[in-house]
Each structure stands twice: as structure tokens, then as C-alpha cells.
Image (tube, rainbow, N blue to C red; front, side, top):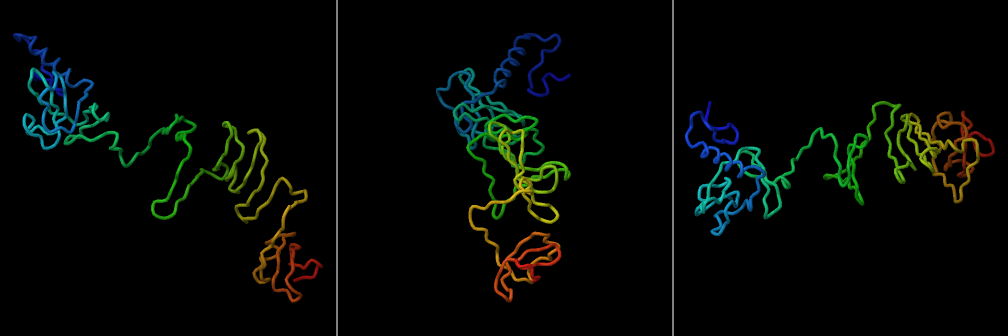
Length: 278
């Protein structure tokens, strides 16, 4: 059996040892230094002459005078002189002058608050300005959230496991849903709204296969447009097939022999408004 503890090198009281109080007091002295470690500074290179008993410092780089050769060690003012202790990897100390916590990595002290790791992997919850939970592992409270580019473009990705699942943006009032846009329950893109968070009305749906947009709530009703409806002029050769466009589709043909005019699909061919095939 050794005569010191393996971690803090606290001296053991040995069998048949004389003056056991000396060994015990030395262990208490080391614990008094290390437990709840706080230091006045971590950048001084020479010990203050009028330091009170028990004052501690982390010796700065390039130490001189009474601290010469003690860089990085913990200096303790005891019985009017400076005592020095070698830190071990993982030791932490609070620096009173700066209010920061520093950590010893085995070769140097680094500021914990400024030394944020450049990678965080598999973090269970992150709460910024609020508390995260199992339903919201990432929670942010503040006037805004900025997602910006790192040199060029930027994409926000919402990935779901299967077509029947939901990937959407949900807008709430008082934590009650009021509007939702995304792929909810299928791969079609839809926009829906709610006045109470319970009853929803779908405003528009875009088919994932055809990109055809429909307005489910007014399929059987008329559409009123308070302003002009403008159809983009197209060459007849650029019109999609009438069957692909579907019966009732409209376009504005710019190269008709009789002059530019609206046309419609009957499901088989494109026709002028008088019924003549284009």
C-alpha cells in the first residue's frame, strides 16, 4: 500500500505512525486548497506582496520572482510564503477577477465559457432562453431566430420518415394552431388554416405527381376575383397536351391566325371560346 491517495496525493495515516495529527492535518490542508477551487486570478506572473493568508492564484505564463518556474500551477499563500501545487487534467477553477471558469486540459488552463467546443453531437435537449422538453428537444425563446448562409445559399430541411407522416411549418397563437403549410399526411403540398386550433380548412393543395394546384374548399363553387385575371401569353406549340392539362384548363394563345385569344381544353383538344379547335 502506498502512503498517498492516487488522485489528490493526500497522505495516509500509516500503522504505528507517530504524530498522526501531522499527516491528518496535511490532508486537510490539501483538501482546503482544492475543494470548491476558486482563484483570485489566472494571469499574474508574480505573487502580490500583501496577499492575505489563503489567497490562491493560477500562475500565468512567464512567471518571475517568487513564482519563477511555476507557470500553470496553483499558488497558495500560506504561513507568509507561496506554496505551489501541480494541477491534474480535468480540474476546474472559478477565477474571481473575471468571473469565468477555467479547465486544465493536462497542459494548460482554458476558459470554459469562451472555449465552446466546435462540435456538439447527440445532445438530448437544447433550450435557448427557455426550457426544452421531449416534445420540443430544441426550444428557442427570443425576438427572432436567424438561419443564414455560410458563403452562398442556405436550405432549411424538414425530413419525414414516410409519405403518411408530416413535415410542415405550424403557426400558432397561444400555442394553438392557426395555419400550417407543408406535406401533412401525404407528399402533396398544402396550406390550411384554423380559427380555433381544432377545425381546419384547406386553402390550397399542390399534387406531388402533377404539380397541379387545387382549391379544395371551392371545387363545387364559383371563384370570384376582385382584380384582373391575367393569363400569360403562350405559343400554341408551347401549350401542354389538352389531356395533360385536363378538361377546363385555360390559356392565352398568342399566335392564333385570328389574333391572340383565350383558349380552353375540353380534355382532348384545345379550343377557342367559340368551340373551334386550335
